[in-house]
Image 1 (cartoon, helix red, strand yellow):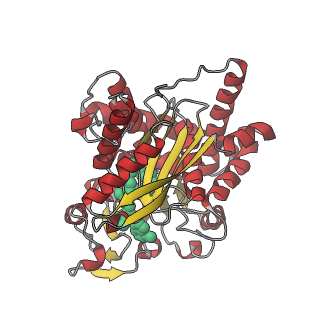
Image 2 (image 1 turned 60 degrees about the horizontal axis):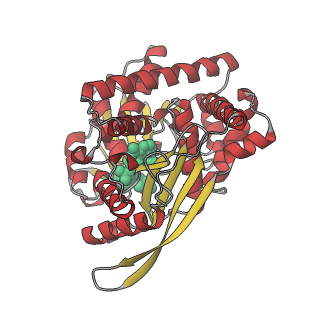
Image 3 (image 1 turned 180 degrees about the vertical axis):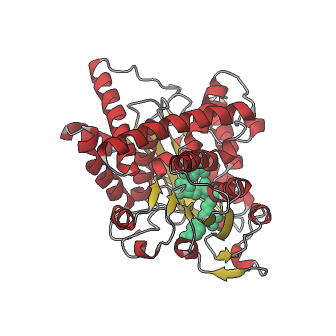
Length: 425
Ligand code: NAD
């Protein structure tokens, strides 16, 4: 990241929104900012060539004021405690913005999973689960996928948890394959939730998605699915990147082919049929809509001036620093903030959890319809406050969340919630 770490950005935004949300008691703010528990673990891995390695992993349990900890697990060489603390804090804010009865948490392993074989990836996941299984559980802390983790990895985690705890409950993790208790629609949920928010914002601004030019940074789960939805709505995806390169085409990229290409774990830098640029090129394309869908800290004080898009849909967590926000506001860019725009993933994770706990299976149409309702309510609450106070959607979303978390903390102080634990003695 730039000058400051992601966790400092999280705390700065909480502070900035506190007056608007009328949550100004320093003791309450401190509880909202600081994680309840931080687990740092060492994870032994035996490589295929017999070499032994000791990797570092984390699980940060940020807030349980509104329900069990909830948040993804990231495998990436840049994973650090600072990053996981920020991501966990953003989860607490996000679950409050969309008003689902969950708190926030996040996990990660500092590793480049692209250097691992399938056997090594499974072994790493099971070893990480061995380190954290006593702290998670269906009513305590429910992990999910994030960058470089997918449904297969979640299946391994659930299986290892069952083996270690003796509790065979798919509700311990979300984002699993449908065969192992995953929900229909979870794979596209983050993108679909962002799309729902963008549609609502476009409708309010009397704009039409048809013919709009779009650039996508990060063509993974969130970014590729967003590209497909936007293309189906008549928009033109003119630039997209993965961590190795960007591909551009002024007449529109074949997003279905590119998504199939990425499914095979291939890299954009190896594509020969397209004009290629640096991986950060989508940020500066002359487009109507920019979708940052890679990592945090991408739009900063240094480069925000170069962003040409009029709309930014933050599918990544924390792609814009607070300093960049100020630059974008002066330029009149409409920013649909991460804690609202990418909340669809955790909403459908919550649906998956509910289905698992109640042994239900919802139809895809049902999942999508329920998601649209939750996203619309959150959008209305956030835009309502933003309009009333004349503030950005980000500050309004944080303010809505702070009010809800502060109310839960105060309720808990009056009548402490009985500790729910599935940990076996
Ligand atoms: P993913 O691993 O499926 O995809 C990430 C993509 O970003 C990959 O294509 C990768 O090559 C690319 N990338 C990484 N670094 C890049 C860089 N510097 N420049 C350009 N591209 C780069 O991950 P994902 O699940 O799609 O997550 C992406 C972002 O969305 C993350 O910030 C994540 O926290 C956020 N998010 C994901 C979910 C979810 O449900 N998956 C939910 C909410 C938020």
